[in-house]
Length: 141
Image (cartoon, rainbow, N blue to C red):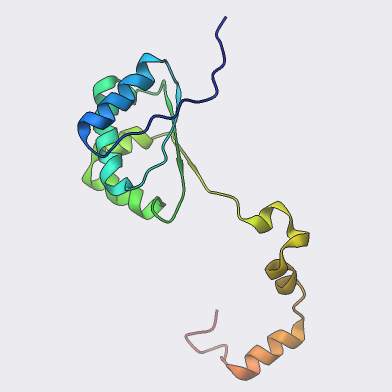
């Protein structure tokens, strides 16, 4: 039987040697889900992609997970894929997970959401009066 292991944190610097050591360890220990928590994704993702190619960790047998943050977003990934094709290969089929905001968890306790929901036509009328925008104005949406 296969023992279920929760996780093993592997920290590494941003040199190719550090990345190789971390991914060699993940491969040796036969981890199939790899969650990346990156400090400098613009530098680290290309290194990880090169190392993953070298160690055969981007062949579809491994599941890569990246949290969507201010540093890791679709625009950055698109840019990195153009500059570093191996990044595209690495994240093809990867999960880009967006952290859940507090109001998603419990809307009834989120003061901003409750205030936003309680707006009435009076608020809209007041805003329109303060900043009138006609239907034909370019700012009208």
